[in-house]
Length: 218
Image (cartoon, rainbow, N blue to C red; front, side, top):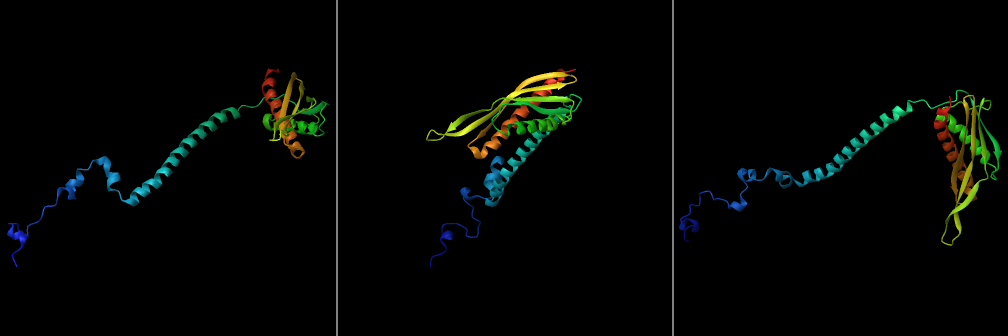
């Protein structure tokens, strides 16, 4: 055999071989990588997966903190309003129906109860059958009309509207207004719920009016 080809070519086999620059993995080569590329270039697959999992959690955390701050602001501002005592007539109030032209037998009872409940819950008034102040309600004939039809052009949804007048008679003075409330039904089966909804909406309008109008009484 002829000697070692490397020795024949004047190359010392025992001398360390320099790696090609393209395959250099020394610390100097890593140090030359721009710092902003390190997280993506050097992170393992597990690290990248962990960051992808944590990013939505961090976003949700920021969203929750923002929502909490908004809720705190709303509580603080609404608290200032709730500290104000609603106006009152300084005497017990009797809710009574003076006239009823409705054809629906439950209209009077639903409206009377809805108004009495609203006066207690929203205004904090003392409602009593023996009240010295009176909230007198008159009920006009209800208005029932179609509001939607099906594919065969047959009415599939109706509106039930209760309306009338309300008179508050108290020691401080008298106030009067009109009211209206509407509910919706798809048939006889839910007519009762529609009538209750109309009564509740009418009661809301009456109490909202009283909350402002009573302030004008002295």
